[in-house]
Every structure is written in C-alpha cells, then in structure tokens.
Length: 258
Image (cartoon, rainbow, N blue to C red):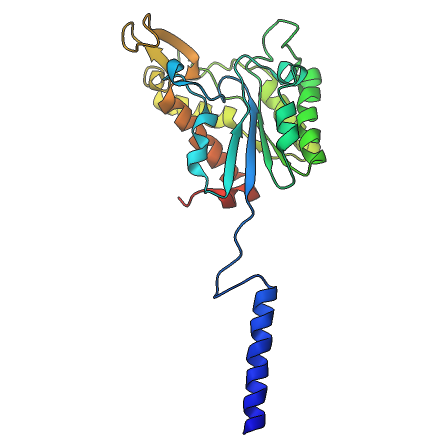
C-alpha cells in the first residue's frame, strides 16, 4: 500500500513538472507575445490633431480593433508617396524600433500619381522598387510586411459606378505581393464595393464634406473627395481589419473578438 502511494505521489509530481515546462499553470495558456503594428502611408492613413478634425486617417482608429497585446505605431504622413516617404528618411524611426514578430502595413499610391519629381513613381518600375525597400527592410529585422492597396476616391460615373483614379498602382502592388510572397489587403477593391453600395450622394458622409460654418476648423466648408472624416476613416479601418481576417494573417489573433 505504501509503495502504491509513493508511486502515485511520484506520478503527480512528474505531471506537475511537465505542466510547468509546457508553460501552463492551472489550465491557463501562455500569454501571447506583445507586438507592434507599424503603419507607413499617406494622408489617408495618418493621424491628425484636434485642430484639423473631423479630418482623419484609418490609422487613427484601427487600434480599437486590437487587444492590448498589440500596439499601433502610425508613422504615416500627409503628402508622401512611396518614394518621398523613403527618401525623406521617414522610415528611419520605424527601422530603429521594429523588431522580430512585429508587422509593417504599407499603403501608398495617392501621391505616387503626382507628377513632381520628389513624389512620382511609375507603377511597374519605381513604385514596385520603392515598395520592395519597405518589404526587405521589414524582413531583415524579422518583421512581417503587409501591402495595402490605396482606397478609392469618391469619383462616380454617371451610371453609379466608381471611376478608377489610381491607374495601375493597385494592380502593380498586387503583382509585387505575388512576386515576393507578401500578403496584400485589397483596400482598393473593398472600398469600391462599399462606395458603390452606398451610392454617390450617401458616400459624402464618409468624406470631408462640410457646409460653410458647419465646423469651426473649416469655416469656409470642404468638398474633399479624397480625405475622410472620422466616420469614414473608421469605416476604412474596418475594411483593413476585415482584410486581415480574410487573408488569414496570424495578426488576426490579436484582433478583438467580433
């Protein structure tokens, strides 16, 4: 009898030690490692101060969809293209901080279309070449790059469909994603679907459309079909979150439960 009790105690002790070695305690699973999600992009991603409200970018609101195990670092800045953002050294603070297991979401295109030499890129040559620098820089540091195609502008045809204003840039980004095995969140396509579902006039509620005197920050009003108000930026953030889930990114494990 004493021998059996001794064996039982020994088995319990071994199981307890194995449980500790596996990182569990009391049936709990180990905590997920903390990560940082970095955002590189233009004005449609950027975070704005109160004196420019209700102007907003989706990077300003996407953090609400994540658990406290993920921190958002929004490095996006207005007016930048994939070229000027890199050439001006805007990525250096990101490179200094980003680490293994972090994510880098990259959205450019609106300003790559501009004709000035500081920002302009060609979709299938210099645009892809600059995007490649972001991808390789992230991978060199053990981080995971994710491409995000630029969302549409509010520009409707007479038949109620959207006129595509980004040319070949979204397709070039998707092509690069396939070539370099990088996940692509197709915000260009998902925003097209949303805008066309809403229709021309109702889509104004997403953008920075203000009547004169409606907002003290814009006394003369605004008719902006590119930039979003806080509601529109929140809707764009929801589309990006949907894209994270749809592409089966491991990052989805850090999202709040639906």
